[in-house]
Length: 161
Image (cartoon, rainbow, N blue to C red; front, side):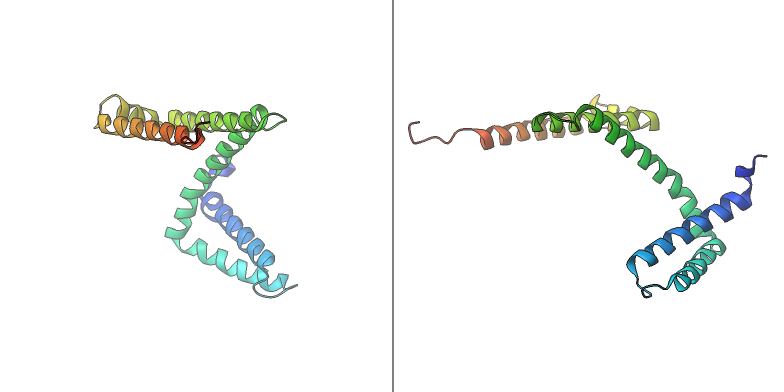
């Protein structure tokens, strides 16, 4: 058994450290308990982190959420890398917008594919699981958006220009 698999580590030490450090950082930054009161901030953080460890539902919630938070941070990092690579440098403003949208779509599709949600999502458009309605609604939204862009960017008529 590896050290990182031990229940004392995964169910005790890691959640305790995470909550202690986060609460301490929030208390230090916000100065709720007073300025220069690091000892009081540490004691309050310690009490909250210890309470977390002895309340299994709260601890389990954190143990379930944190890995997904890490996944979300990695996904955002991938998006920022793609955006910085393709559109974040010098260039036209429209190019940055287009590359940002393309990078966002790429990251969303990538996450959907690797989480297994892609099959469900594609089923909405192929007619499986009531997909005809979803495809029609999305098509109407796309058409409405195109009409809105055309109307907003079109010339004003009526003056004979």
